[in-house]
Image 1 (tube, rainbow, N blue to C red):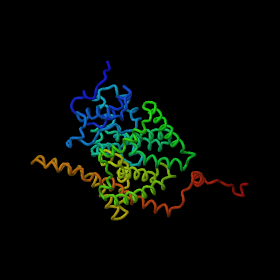
Image 2: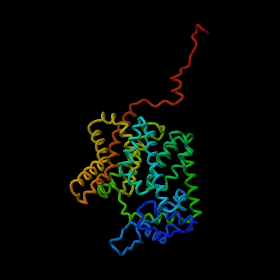
Image 3: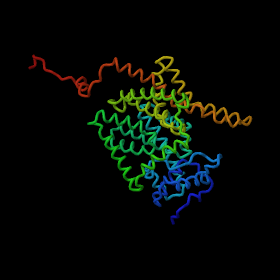
Image 4: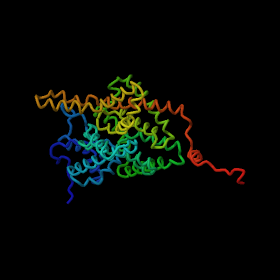
Amino acid sequence: MNQRLDASGFPGRTFSDLFPRWLGARELLLHGRNPYSQEITREIQRGYYGRPIDRNLASDPSDEQRFAYPLFVVFLLAPTVDLPFTVAKTLFTLILSASAVWTVVLWIQIIGLKTGRDKIFICILLALATIPYAQGIQLQQLSLLVAFFLAAAIFALATERFIVAGCLLAIATIKPQLSICLIGCVLLWSLWQWRSRKWVAISFFTALIVLMLASELLLPRWPYQFFAGIQPYLRYTHATVSILELFGPVGGAIVALFLASITLVAVWCARSKPVNSDDFRQAISMVLVFTCIVIPSLSPHNQVLLTPAYLLLAKERKRIMTLGRIARSLYAAAWLTLVWPWIVGSLLAIALLFHRANPRLWSLPFATNPLIPLTAFTALMPLLVRRLGVSRIAPPELSTEQKQKRQNPPTTQSPALK
């Protein structure tokens, strides 16, 4: 017998990023309650923290844990709303773990990294051992699911399943801050050769409109409540852009504009290229790294978007080594910031065997977190500069018909045989 569960009945605390979304989806789909309402917010806090937040208490958490997603996220969570949260949590942990594995596998194929099955297995293990993937799985963060949708969409483009790609990009907008830059890149790519690529844009906008209208039927005028919650969300989560933290407001804005211009150059160079081209791989890698740089969040789990960038760096290692000392230094810095948590974490674990470590030292593995996207971006820049230089001196690319004529030149009879 299905029983309506009150959030106050959850034992203890539920530190899961899935819980606010799951509870909001359950209350909307089963009981018709507004997930953006203050009443649901208090129930979320009661289930997440053990009681609602008291703003008069300085010791209480500042994160209000509101339902802060576009409403159509409830369609993804709908199959779990009848389950106890403990079961839903376990189920999503398995789903996100599988999604993480497939995300790495898909990006390996998209980037064109030639490895055997044993090396693919090693790549998966190393990726899952990084803080972004480990944290995302531990907290049941939907960022991992969005990363999978984006990787699957690009893979669908590579296999010319344009309708599937557009639909996957639409679903990825459950976290628009993570998907909007890549979606813009793909839409430009599809518009540039509209006749052959139009179904990417058509299917994307069609699927997005369907999701929004279906959500409107569940909760009229929900977009107003969603957008009204963005400003409070940025306030109570202390949302911060990493480059603003590193360079200050003015310096950070200048750096952001500089990186944006470089990203636009990469996207523009790839606008007419096939998905399996080096230019397109470079563009989407830089777009996803730029996303991590400019989103107002320092949460490590968002950095799962860096997977194609680091796979591309691994693939192009020999080429980067020939591009000079600066390129090699940037390459080394990108990998150093990535492996820093492993190095420092291992040293701290060894230190615990001999004496108790200072609690403040446990923040050291996260010290390079704001630097990882920035160093990855700069490590990719020499590859872009090289490709721009090669494209200027290289002859214009031949069309398919011209290539076929060169491969199969027309035969003519000699006058003696006529």
